[in-house]
Length: 479
Image 1 (cartoon, rainbow, N blue to C red):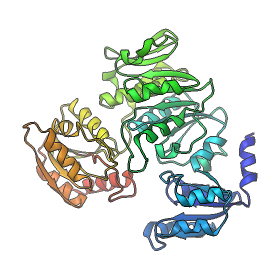
Image 2: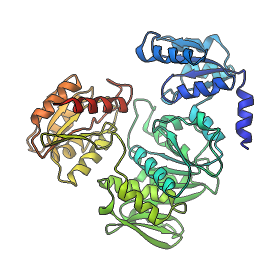
Image 3: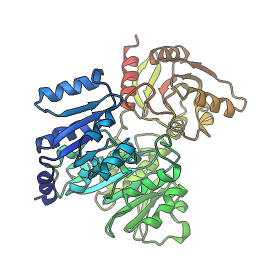
Image 4: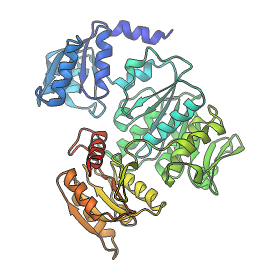
């Protein structure tokens, strides 16, 4: 029996609840807490006649879910008109918005779908955060645990809300979460097993500073007890130093063993690294060889690091054989160097998840390791990231670049700066169909065309999946 869940159900009944944003995670939230008897007001910046919001409102009404609405450009004013008991913020909404601060001062409790889920979850929680590699590492952990026979729930920033599944989750199940810095902003509950893949400047369009972004990431493990475990990237100076905040067990991963051995680390600290080409784990002084990197199906050194992180997290819960089966069969996550089709000898790839320069650099390096050449389609919304190294990485693979996005001037500038005499051509378009048509014209048989945007989707789309799906639809429509 989940006594915390039963208490929550009694507590939420009849309470006035504000749900800020009616996106992917909050629609199931509304359905769930409405079924528990909450008096809900939904808030959204979209106008009532927006295609997506009007459809959502109609769907709720058809389902018999009768709630109040505060929408449009002044939607936050609705917080002043009612004294709410609870406010569920959408992940990207900062907790220090004046309207939220005022509501909290008047007695509201500010929380989120994921915070409540983690507080109520009876199962062991594995959680992954970082600037890059979160989704792949999260997926690998879940697949390894599934291969080991556990019932696994996967959610969070990966696109699947879980609070409406909380009644199903049992104590001996496993939960695997991808958590963004936005979700961690006010998180008080830490995961049982936490992974920080790396930290580079990211989302500085939302966070007040890089220091805040770094600090928020540590919430994933900061409140663990001594039984908790945190897995940290040993090569990244920022994540390495996070071990000083750990209250539980620490494990490092890195391609080079020496990056797991800084400051004379004890043999009792876990390590995962490459020994030659073999992925290797050291745990309590015992060395175990896992798999040769050439036998991992998905390409790229960054994916070797993702495997090392996932193996570290799962160590003690899965066997070497189970890890190897996943490594040899897992073909990658949608929107990550995803092969869409081959047409006229040209392979078309969708890597819409590449929402930062560092992600695109990793994608280019993965393609370089396979001696790929071809045409890049790039461009998205900038997050005040660092672009150094991007131009060099792109030109090692793609000397024909088609830009389509608000950060196009930044991408163009870094390519020109880092060309160092290499020849290239850049074309700019306002829409993806024109960009794809030009890329098709530029590509030769035996080459590739890849979408790797170098920015978020918010200049043109609601999320990177929508961007990637449009690209795939356009590619499939090519005749």
